[in-house]
Length: 111
Length: 114
Image (cartoon, rainbow over all chains, first blue to last red; front, side, top):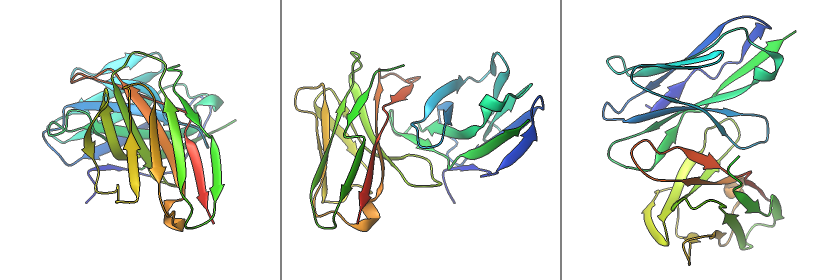
């Protein structure tokens, strides 16, 4: 079983729709959680860190469920420019620095 | 934008050749990471440095791979006797350290081994 798992998608949704992704992690000792966005043939860019209380940044909301060991990303009022691959990332307690990435979820927004 | 730069951006080489990649973080962050990413996968951790000390290496980092950060600033990743399976994007990232550290990636070096 992979340490961090994501539905690869693709999710194909119309502009303006709300879309949500989940990501599960296997190490219950994981401490830090992140969502990255990656455009085709580009490097991953940090979208947001995920805090225990949940956090929101404009149209993006991230939540953490420690009991069920998953994090989620909600995108409201999706734009064409949101089309990308969204990578979930987790840092385990056993390694203060190594981040484990999921394989990513592809999102395509159609006009 | 972190300003992490990587050189070269693309590299095509023949199997068996050695290649070296360079990463230059601009900021004062003391941690530098190398990851490898293949198509359809997320980045996989290879190794990281705190200043000039290499503190962790992944099992993915075979003895053909070596990384250095001699002065605690730029870093190099060398692959000896390249194999076709080494074809991937090699990403460098910088981080400030701490339990909530976030990592910021450079543009990557895309390697193709023929």
